[in-house]
Length: 227
Image 1 (tube, rainbow, N blue to C red):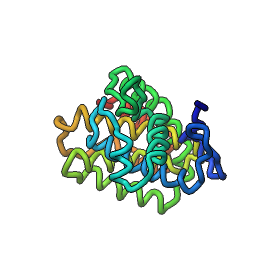
Image 2: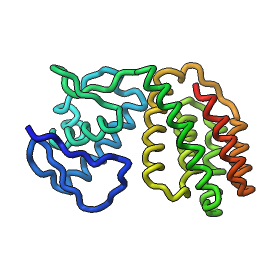
Image 3: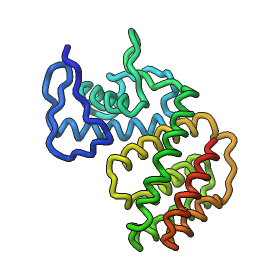
Image 4: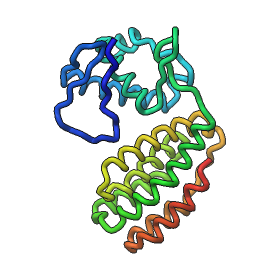
């Protein structure tokens, strides 16, 4: 069997891409459909619809989404490249297990990448982008549930780095955010309490002042407090 060729999520290449599954070419239309299925499945996994270690039945997923099993397999391979899914001998594709070493790795990687991306983003953010950051910040502080808070929190962290002009770094940080949200939802939702986030407010203030160094410093401090 030929090894599948994967388009890694951080490549950001929008050109026509031919990939192989089980030795056969995958049409571009199917690639787009599989990417949509991957996005929808990742949202379900992150929200807890599938539990860590649970087997992902390709036939049932194909039936639920009204697509072929080949399309589902392509979607699951994409999720495997993100770290949400793993292939196990005699079990097939399963939701990845909760790995505490992986959680620590996610913390370290976020601390390494997000402050740098923010440092480069602050000088380039438009007035419209800053207004969007302010809106998402208000959503985060006003969230009534852990799920709504984490969704807004993730969008805030992505919005502040949107103008760094480094698409590969943005894609990598987006994937780290997705994985961290998955761990947060599984491990910390019950402990969540509604609160305003002073670090987010300080980052927003630094952005408005175009003080990239200050924003970088606050983000570093903020990420050391990750649960």
